[in-house]
Image 1 (cartoon, one colour):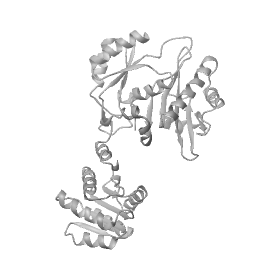
Image 2 (cartoon, helix red, strand yellow):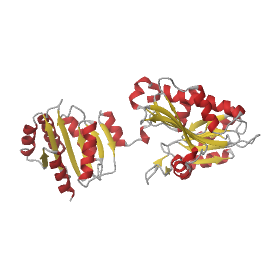
Image 3 (cartoon, rainbow, N blue to C red):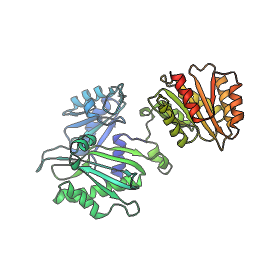
Image 4 (cartoon, rainbow, N blue to C red):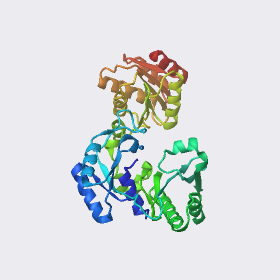
Length: 396
């Protein structure tokens, strides 16, 4: 589950990470009031207005701007709220901005120049260890840094059994070229950041930039946070942070009815039971010359109601030109699934895309007879190759 910047910063702050303070506003008038309160609390004269959407690169799309007075706060907030923000990480349509974060200006003058760093905490799946990735090139796309100057990216692997050790935090501060007060501040920052990542059951914490202020404070100026959905039962307060407006509406609907659905960009809808078979089915579709339009795992209970719901979800995608149903009858019998498909088809009326059904396993032969004798425009298959051939034929 992805969070907004302000939500990620709330979690960071609760674990002792210094953050760029701010307040959320949903209207231009609220933004002005937020700026006034922020000035009272922090003494900041200028404010940064940041669009709150689940996408990076907001500044490149005009979603992050500096306001030097309250009039500019009102003007900029009014321009950003309600806009469709297009960034390198959104679709061409962009994402509608419903709220902004009015944040303090932390680039104030002092004894030294502010410096920006990149830092993220995530799981290294190759080693089974957590990893802190960091760089002196903060404020830039980490992909661009990796491509052009890979020697400026450092990693620190952390054994989950021992956690972050003191020498590792100090090595990070050293590699970032820090000394004195800034060095000590960075070691504290890294320790608190890793604790936030670990204890919040997150899959990603990305801070870009981490700022060394002109008076050697270390703080998170941004926060991209992704929580592990499977651990949300342990964090009811985090689960309440979910913003469904930022998510694919079909995926939201699928989740509410207990289906595992991920929207993709292809032309062949998939209805499968089991994640492994779903992945194999997607490979099958690509080999047949198509592109999967979704990942959809209906699980072990594929009755008529569940099948009908799955069909409706798939057909909401206008790009779907065919549907491949691929069910292995282990826990659930194939004939029961076949009857569910027939009943769902009849309940839904006309379906204007061809449907190929491959049922294999318990009572697969009975299931094939049910499909073949239903009188519906549904093609049955037993073997993987047979299903692939039929997909290829309907796409031709």
